[in-house]
Amino acid sequence: SSAMTVRPSSDDDASKTAAAADPSAAIVVPPTDMLYYTYEGNFQLECDAEILACQFISPDNEDNKKQAVHVSMNRTCMHARGGGQPQDVGVIETLDDPKTKILVENVLLDRDTGVATHMGTLVMDNNNDDGDDDDDNQRPSLVGQTVQVMVNAENRKILSECHTAGHVVDMA
Image (cartoon, rainbow, N blue to C red):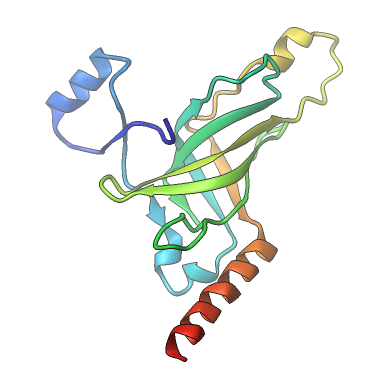
């Protein structure tokens, strides 16, 4: 699947109970605050956010140091793909040490739920030399972590200029 299965957040106790009873049920995630929907947020290249859902995609190999992952957060400054416009790329980085990074290659917004899914590659920085290699391939627990979301500024500038050029051509 290209994105996590999510259900919009609900105050309905029955749906929460059903989701808790069935671990394979859809993850309940509230809509993502898309910061770029505001004038000020449109120029924002970094923000702090909390990871609300995380799905590790089965790797083709056993190297969990580079692992495909999809995450949804409470907010983002990354533009989602849509309306013929490409998405931002960038990095999501944990604030803890050692750092865990997600190299974001795709951002999709589910218009029905309002949830943005950031898709990329998890890269773990394991600089500990304790000789215990067993811990080095453990997937980190990302849900609930505060992270820094960083847009690749040069890529955003190119996308912005191409978007503006498209409007200029339309008017010609």
